[in-house]
Length: 150
Image (cartoon, rainbow, N blue to C red; front, side, top):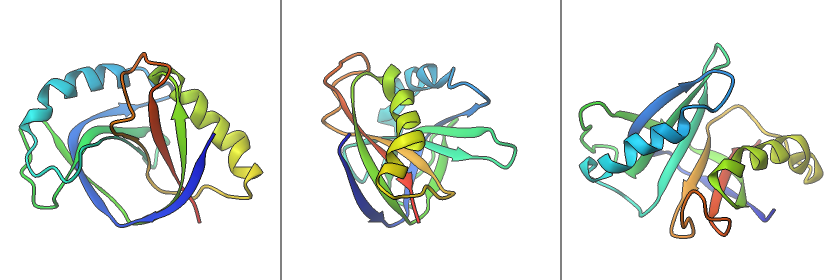
Protein backbone atom coordinates (compact mmCIF):
# COMPACT_ATOMS: atom_id res chain seq x y z
CA UNK A 1 0.00 0.00 0.00
CA UNK A 2 1.42 3.39 -0.99
CA UNK A 3 2.13 5.80 1.85
CA UNK A 4 3.45 9.27 2.60
CA UNK A 5 3.95 11.38 5.74
CA UNK A 6 2.26 14.77 6.08
CA UNK A 7 1.63 17.36 8.77
CA UNK A 8 -1.78 18.99 8.56
CA UNK A 9 -3.13 22.10 10.25
CA UNK A 10 -6.40 21.79 12.14
CA UNK A 11 -9.56 21.80 10.05
CA UNK A 12 -13.31 21.72 10.57
CA UNK A 13 -15.83 19.18 9.29
CA UNK A 14 -19.62 19.46 9.34
CA UNK A 15 -21.73 16.36 8.94
CA UNK A 16 -23.61 13.64 10.79
CA UNK A 17 -22.24 11.33 13.46
CA UNK A 18 -22.66 7.80 14.72
CA UNK A 19 -21.40 6.07 17.86
CA UNK A 20 -19.56 2.81 17.05
CA UNK A 21 -19.34 0.18 19.77
CA UNK A 22 -17.46 -2.96 18.72
CA UNK A 23 -18.29 -3.37 15.03
CA UNK A 24 -18.55 -0.73 12.33
CA UNK A 25 -22.21 -1.59 11.68
CA UNK A 26 -24.16 1.55 10.95
CA UNK A 27 -21.47 3.53 9.16
CA UNK A 28 -22.82 2.65 5.71
CA UNK A 29 -26.30 3.76 6.76
CA UNK A 30 -24.80 6.96 8.18
CA UNK A 31 -23.34 7.81 4.75
CA UNK A 32 -26.69 6.99 3.14
CA UNK A 33 -28.36 9.51 5.47
CA UNK A 34 -25.63 12.11 4.96
CA UNK A 35 -25.14 12.15 1.17
CA UNK A 36 -28.64 13.47 0.34
CA UNK A 37 -28.02 16.33 2.81
CA UNK A 38 -24.58 17.44 1.57
CA UNK A 39 -26.16 20.38 -0.29
CA UNK A 40 -27.22 21.89 3.07
CA UNK A 41 -23.60 22.51 4.07
CA UNK A 42 -22.25 25.97 3.21
CA UNK A 43 -18.66 27.21 3.38
CA UNK A 44 -17.02 24.12 1.92
CA UNK A 45 -13.23 24.49 1.69
CA UNK A 46 -12.33 21.63 -0.68
CA UNK A 47 -14.01 19.06 -2.97
CA UNK A 48 -13.61 16.06 -0.67
CA UNK A 49 -15.58 14.21 1.99
CA UNK A 50 -14.26 12.85 5.28
CA UNK A 51 -14.98 9.91 7.54
CA UNK A 52 -13.62 10.99 10.93
CA UNK A 53 -12.87 8.43 13.69
CA UNK A 54 -12.38 9.73 17.21
CA UNK A 55 -11.89 7.26 20.08
CA UNK A 56 -13.87 8.18 23.19
CA UNK A 57 -12.70 7.51 26.78
CA UNK A 58 -14.94 4.42 27.08
CA UNK A 59 -13.32 2.85 24.00
CA UNK A 60 -16.22 3.50 21.65
CA UNK A 61 -15.63 5.51 18.46
CA UNK A 62 -17.42 8.62 17.28
CA UNK A 63 -17.59 8.48 13.48
CA UNK A 64 -18.46 11.66 11.58
CA UNK A 65 -19.31 11.61 7.86
CA UNK A 66 -18.84 15.16 6.69
CA UNK A 67 -17.44 17.88 4.51
CA UNK A 68 -14.55 20.26 5.25
CA UNK A 69 -15.77 23.79 5.93
CA UNK A 70 -14.54 27.16 7.12
CA UNK A 71 -14.44 27.46 10.92
CA UNK A 72 -17.36 29.90 10.96
CA UNK A 73 -19.61 27.77 8.72
CA UNK A 74 -23.22 27.49 9.82
CA UNK A 75 -24.49 24.22 11.22
CA UNK A 76 -27.57 22.70 9.53
CA UNK A 77 -30.22 21.18 11.81
CA UNK A 78 -29.32 17.68 12.98
CA UNK A 79 -25.66 17.98 12.00
CA UNK A 80 -22.50 18.29 14.08
CA UNK A 81 -19.31 20.29 13.76
CA UNK A 82 -16.02 18.49 14.45
CA UNK A 83 -12.61 20.14 14.80
CA UNK A 84 -9.77 17.89 13.62
CA UNK A 85 -6.61 18.99 15.48
CA UNK A 86 -3.30 19.75 13.79
CA UNK A 87 -1.35 16.51 13.56
CA UNK A 88 1.39 14.57 11.82
CA UNK A 89 0.02 11.63 9.82
CA UNK A 90 1.10 8.69 7.77
CA UNK A 91 -1.27 8.46 4.81
CA UNK A 92 -1.97 5.15 3.09
CA UNK A 93 -3.94 4.90 -0.13
CA UNK A 94 -6.60 2.18 0.02
CA UNK A 95 -7.57 0.74 -3.36
CA UNK A 96 -10.81 -1.22 -3.35
CA UNK A 97 -14.35 -1.18 -2.10
CA UNK A 98 -15.60 0.55 1.01
CA UNK A 99 -16.28 -2.88 2.53
CA UNK A 100 -12.52 -3.56 2.36
CA UNK A 101 -11.43 -0.37 4.19
CA UNK A 102 -11.57 -2.13 7.57
CA UNK A 103 -9.11 -4.74 6.26
CA UNK A 104 -6.75 -1.96 5.18
CA UNK A 105 -6.92 -0.29 8.60
CA UNK A 106 -6.20 -3.65 10.23
CA UNK A 107 -3.19 -4.27 7.94
CA UNK A 108 -1.88 -0.78 8.71
CA UNK A 109 -2.12 -1.23 12.48
CA UNK A 110 -0.96 -4.85 12.67
CA UNK A 111 1.84 -4.87 10.07
CA UNK A 112 2.55 -1.80 7.99
CA UNK A 113 3.31 0.76 10.70
CA UNK A 114 5.88 -1.54 12.35
CA UNK A 115 7.36 -2.46 8.97
CA UNK A 116 7.90 1.27 8.29
CA UNK A 117 9.30 1.88 11.78
CA UNK A 118 6.34 4.12 12.67
CA UNK A 119 4.09 4.18 15.71
CA UNK A 120 0.49 5.36 15.83
CA UNK A 121 -0.30 7.90 18.50
CA UNK A 122 -3.55 8.95 20.13
CA UNK A 123 -5.45 11.23 17.81
CA UNK A 124 -8.08 11.42 15.13
CA UNK A 125 -7.90 8.92 12.26
CA UNK A 126 -9.81 9.65 9.10
CA UNK A 127 -10.72 8.61 5.59
CA UNK A 128 -10.52 11.23 2.83
CA UNK A 129 -12.71 10.70 -0.23
CA UNK A 130 -11.74 12.84 -3.23
CA UNK A 131 -12.19 12.50 -7.01
CA UNK A 132 -10.31 9.17 -6.99
CA UNK A 133 -13.21 7.66 -5.06
CA UNK A 134 -15.49 6.37 -7.80
CA UNK A 135 -18.10 4.54 -5.71
CA UNK A 136 -18.45 2.32 -2.66
CA UNK A 137 -18.53 -0.93 -4.66
CA UNK A 138 -15.85 -0.04 -7.24
CA UNK A 139 -12.67 -2.10 -6.77
CA UNK A 140 -10.72 0.68 -8.54
CA UNK A 141 -11.77 3.35 -6.02
CA UNK A 142 -9.03 5.06 -4.01
CA UNK A 143 -9.42 6.46 -0.51
CA UNK A 144 -6.68 7.99 1.62
CA UNK A 145 -6.46 6.70 5.20
CA UNK A 146 -4.81 9.09 7.69
CA UNK A 147 -3.20 7.61 10.82
CA UNK A 148 -1.78 9.98 13.49
CA UNK A 149 1.88 9.34 14.26
CA UNK A 150 4.50 10.78 16.59
